[in-house]
Length: 275
Length: 272
Image 1 (cartoon, helix red, strand yellow):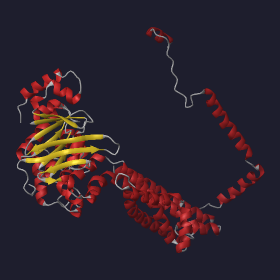
Image 2: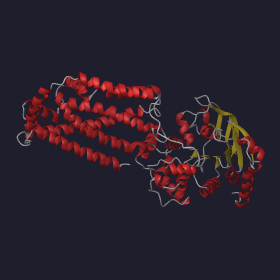
Image 3: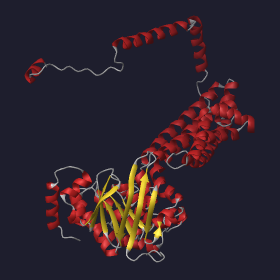
Image 4: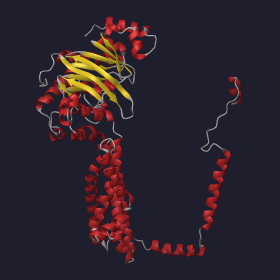
């Protein structure tokens, strides 16, 4: 893992006082502070526009935060220059809503693009990746059951297959932390559960911490160890999955009859043993 | 129709498509004004029917001069002109495309900072403002008669054309794909090669084939101002009243342009 100088033991990510104001004047995040310990899978829930996507994009600075600090394993990400930021991004794998695969590239090329931060421009341009990277790509593709499709173009795959490729691309970076943005937003319920289970399993296998933005409260409760609720750019809930009561959901999402969601959650909790 | 409406019970709700101009007074005033203007404008045309009838006969003789087309007696000049034109076309297209790529990158608002964007858009505007003939006259004045002037003209025009259309395609890319490449820790050039090039390459190839075809057609015209190529040969044959040779040259141009047209549309279909 990263050669960070004396990281605070067990703290993968520390976010303090994070604020983001967009050029349009919209305040997306207000003084958000959050700590993610090693190996924890955390779900970030909240209504559309609550700032979930902005929050995880501020962690790898795809979005520049306006204020506050993000510390990854002891390194202050917010203080890094361009080159150092690129090296820091290698340590954070990102999985996207609607997969964000480069559609005209093959499965293997998409997977190998996870190594771009480690390989020079011309080597990457002529697709001459080190054999170790290619071996690892085949191993991970086999792990998610896609090693027979390496030369298929990404746009020829089904939704679930594409998201698996997206997961493998993120893992190819050999990350310490996974940033996952609505991984199931365009998948059917069964595939959604499979993808969530796969992400959580892989995090377990590699001891990865993860922040998962997710709309589906039931899925979040079934798969995450911890839930953080975001509302209007502020944290309004931070606790265990079973602490999500009707009152808490009302604070996060607003007034609604939550009894249906709650009962569904309980059923899920029974049929789906915690991973 | 009446019956079915009666069955449904309610009052009859009629529907007509909404006219473009809602107020009927304005609408008919606009129609009337348009017709009046056309009538008056036609009235100002000074048509001399007697002269036109005479002209028809002269035009007929002129066209008759084209037949039969003579491919043979000036075949050396024709071949030379053709080779010059094709060389001019290929070289100028290649140079133009290579130079247009950095301009296109600079002219894409989602890649370039504002000062670079404005500078590259200015290059595009400059290249697109003037007709090829005007640019060719300037280059002929600068480098003298011959194919070099034509080549410079076509390369210059290619930059504006390619850079504008390619920049628009770059601005239309799927942001998520580029963002995913950035998130891996890729450098700026890797972002171009992995996040953007795959998205715009089919368009780049299609535009290049199209531009090659345009440049050949233009090369035939540029000869008229002394910028070399088959256009020069054509111009000379007109000046010597060798209409049969001119006809042969025009037929050859038509055939080559048609060939370019078909092959470029075939290429564009294949690269998607």
